[in-house]
Length: 387
Ligand code: GDP
Ligand code: MN
Image (cartoon, rainbow, N blue to C red):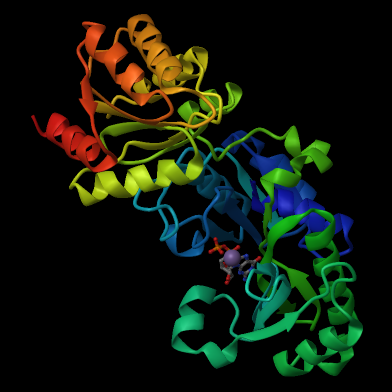
């Protein structure tokens, strides 16, 4: 789960990380006056609260000097669509705008804690070339990226924080506050069960003080049960269909294509998507019905897939391991009757009792195409949408 900038900054403040004085979040331009008052004297900065970086270049970060400028910026920003290099072409609608007191920037630094899967530990990543896209920097100037591997239990050690401070050229007067900052960042990462905590930029102000000007936190979904307050937060990331799927316990991720896929098991689901692509088609979704694949679950999955108007054919690829193929076939038939399927359906079953299962499908009289193999099924699905 990804947190918005203002949520990350609220958490930072709790951990003792210096953040700008804030006027809070507004959802209507009329709220700007009160927000500015709360943020203290100007200049101020208005920031679109969307789950994407690169807002600065896309008009989502606006520095304002007067109340009139702030109101104009608020009017322009609330409700705007913002497309950055991280939104894959699609625009995100700005519903919340953060109003902060603007900070005078002397230097911008990049710093984050992420999970280093290769080293099997958290790693603190930093660069003196802040403000820049870290991915770009990693390609063009990898030597400018500093790394400290952290103990997964103790977090960063003071000597590691000092080593980073020296390499980053933190002024000696700020050494202590940098060590406190790095320690707090490391604690935030560990205590939140995060997979990423990023501050870009961490700034040195004109007075030489450190401050987190932007924040991004990604919390491991599997650890949400340990963070009740976060788990209750509205899921702004998922689409309406994805939310509906979550409710009935189906793993669903919407994609751009037109072939709806219903598969049991995440690995088989991914293999199915790859095979569809190999056959020249585009999957409309990733969907894992889960181990059970009961008639109810299959019906629920159908309903979810068919909510997507892009879907022009449905491909079912189910492996009868724990469940027998005849039971699955029965489930598919019941589900098809219930949802009044109007697009072509291609079914590939494999596993225990597969012959009985295929026979049931064949004799059902329902309009569906049986496939012999995954490759056969993918080709038939691609042919069905091209028709
Ligand atoms: P992002 O582009 O989505 O990562 O948004 P950021 O919050 O990182 O802002 C982008 C850039 O806007 C920063 O790198 C700064 O250069 C600038 N910026 C953001 N907040 C302030 C501020 O308070 N004062 C000044 N002077 N610049 C700011
Ligand atoms: Mn940023």
